[in-house]
Length: 213
Image (cartoon, rainbow, N blue to C red; front, side, top):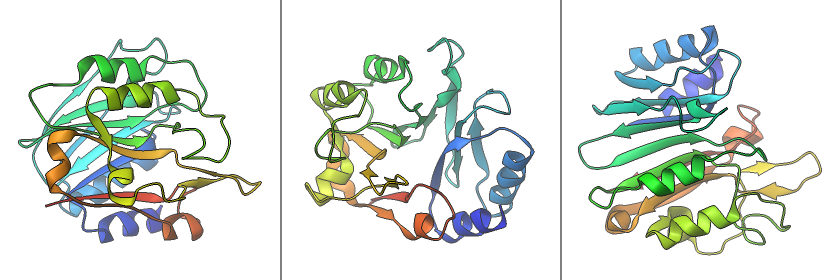
């Protein structure tokens, strides 16, 4: 936990989204550390202590919404944070489980405000974000793009082969994503992974960064 706190506070990020966050004593310890380091604005869902959920922590003020009934099982896995300049959906979508969380985001995309979708979506485009074709919900990501939401990593990096999670067998998967509405494209300066966070054992996922300017 000490190494995670140190890493998060060293990034210089204005906004942090943590997927697979657990609202337990360790989670509270982490939130207190972020608070002491300037992340005064925080939102978590009301998930049970043993369930994976989401934390949004920010140095920039925001209002938040949590959703009690968007999915029969995984209602705590999306938080909407509304900043002055854009809305952000912090997400942890379960791996190979039936849910309607993509449908919720597609149905609620604002036509009037820039929107970012960030987190571990546990999906991707088959043959591109993995070499195989085992992703669930690929069609939902394509539907997001049909609704003028762009894969911001691909926007800046094209079809480069890069993965955010590696299996024990050595197979790579790009589970972690930033998607953004097209009106954000002019201010997206970079979108990339920090693989050191995975290679050093800090997490089993690479941390992902989005830079706007």
